[in-house]
Image 1: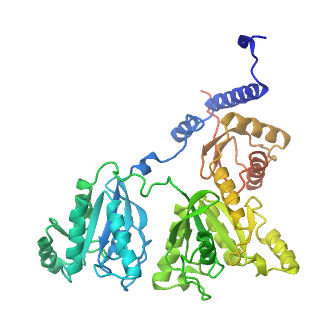
Image 2: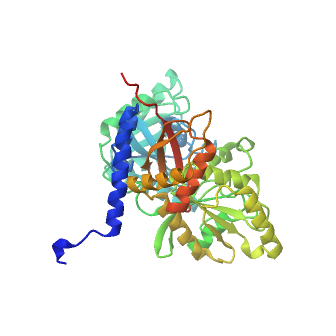
Image 3: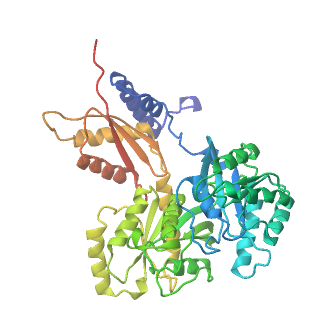
Length: 495
């Protein structure tokens, strides 16, 4: 047989057959009433993802100023929800924290920073350094000054920093709550940064005009692309109830004391981002505030820190949930795991304090897992000790497995061929004299895997769970939730 006569492999033939099946099923959908959204979904090629290229080039806006001038309040005003920690104590914000912002149809990344002081020492010096870095990694700056206090020596020093940076600056004269404060704002012309925009971040007064001015100097695409985009080191959130060992684990992974560890629960209040070398790769770990029993039982900065913990989860790709192996699983543990699943993030369960468990405790732990975590047998499990470092090297393969599953895409042909076999072997039960039929399935996206099934009638929850279980058996998906939605479509009436 010469080269021209080489026959296609059985794998190629199988893929071609599966593709033909999918094309035939897709053609059969022409007989059903489909919405524009359905057609757009069906028209998407395999491999097309909702990956947001726009996010990589989104312009970056840094908010800087002295401590307690209202930067975090302004952040909350712009993004429309309370995420930045706000308290009537200077220095609550310590690190750069990025949020998604938008105004008049323009999207941008908003970076909240700690207060900048010229004579800072200790942790306050690190805060000032972070603010300077934020300016370097920004396309434009919102410089917030307390109009009721006026320009201080620290403000003058910030002006010099901003002039050196060459970045466009919008001067925000904050705490102008009414007309009487306009004169205070006008006095800030003396800073030489152009028009001061009188704003009340607390009440929203004047923020729209200031944001309009920001958009006029904000580039369409970022010149610092890469500073806050979704690329770079994979992002891992460390979650768990207070005092379960999250900070101890982060310190052990980092090889040094990066985070305050104390026997008192709730020492960590702000998430702490750390770039850590592990398993030959760089990872971005986020140690979050312990999620407390009920949000309404927390007060002040702790209340908003619990919200920021949720934000850290939303921005992560995979969550390592720490559970105390030495003590019984709690309702809090189960609720935190549910948060990860609802957020659609990869999930790894790390049973900490394994060095403190004996045979009897391990027996009861297995029973607790069977009882309380029966719905998530797909989550990788690692038994570790943050104190001794036992089995920490096993975290990396578990995290990588979860991330691979989180980004898995199943070709449409293979998906429909597989579901055809499943449905023919185990058809949906007949209900009310009717038997709903699965017409076609497609994967709408990844991160996490999202499947849409078109059906001729309502698919019961039990059968949906059966399909999800079979999808996991066939395609893996270890360490990731998967979303399965059903669109019931009627046959077109013949005229």
